[in-house]
Amino acid sequence: MDIGMLFSDSFGYAKEAVWGKWVKWILLLISTIIFPLLMGYELMVMRGEKPAPELGNWLKLFIDGILYLIIGIIYSIPIIIVAMLTMGSGFFAMLSGDPSAVMAGIGVMLIGFIITLIVTIIISLISTIAVVRFAREGKFGEAFNFGEILGKIKSIGWINFFIKILVLGIVLTIIVMVINMIPVIGQIIYFILIPVIAIFTARYVSLIYDSA
Image (cartoon, rainbow, N blue to C red; front, side, top):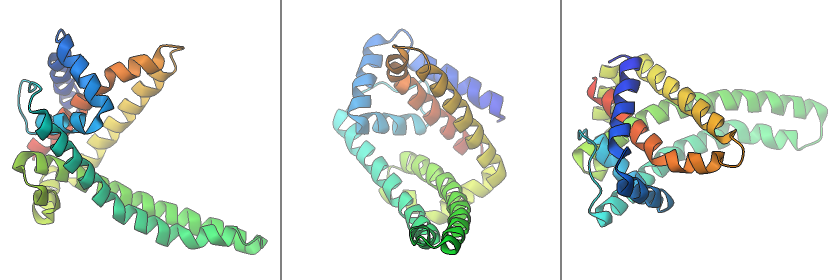
């Protein structure tokens, strides 16, 4: 499935999920405040249900959302460690006050930043598939079944996967920036659209997962 089809399907899916269903939209906005609920609903979308599932079983949504959050935290730990190891020495060198040490520190920080960025991209791709796998299998441990996760990414194609996620990130960033530039009501509009963006994104990555 090409990027155009991914966006078209995901937009139609998100629109159908909330448009004209104002009670559901309001409940999703409340879930945005109690954010594990919205994360739990995203997992329901990632299971590939079509049309978008209705809200229900709030306790399960909350627990699933907490597990989703924990998975994200665990996957962020290697990134934090790499950042500390690669940029930490450069940071302290910059604090020394010695001009040569400061210059060396800047160089170390730059190299460390590049290494951290690469690691972040790789782990972000892995964690994205990990979350969808958790949603599909319903088992926490499946989010760390690296053999299956890496096999799925290989089937999708690392470069293909990266490009599709990159385009998604760029488009969403532009949309959010434009909305927030609207005087006075920009923040309100953004808040109202958070559930739509969440559903859109969950559907998008679910389709990528199924494209393997």
